Length: 114
Image (cartoon, rainbow, N blue to C red; front, side, top):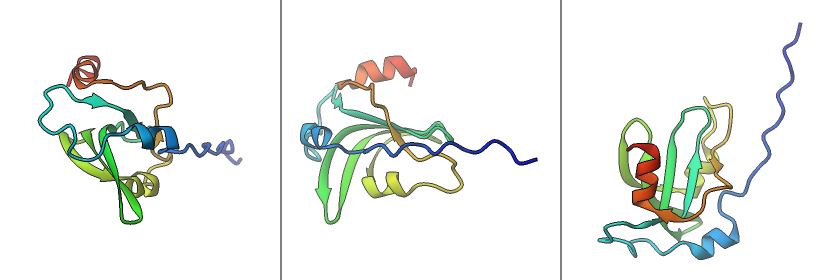
């Protein structure tokens, strides 16, 4: 017996024009004690979460800066290509939380008990 067919995950634009235009450029929130988080990406397979505070075009890619909750909780840079190309061994692609609204980092931390 063959298992149930997998329903393909719809492709969601991780960086729509509205978000691209709303993001402050890299380093613009540096030194701000409670920066604004503009987007949330997540992996259903690994429970990793990327909270985006800044972003800028870089060569043929787009570079983000934000809080990453994965094996550790840390600030760092990550690119759009890294998020879109991350597949194996995962079953699902990285997704943008379509319901996330820009909010302060302090609120994000309180919600996630970081």
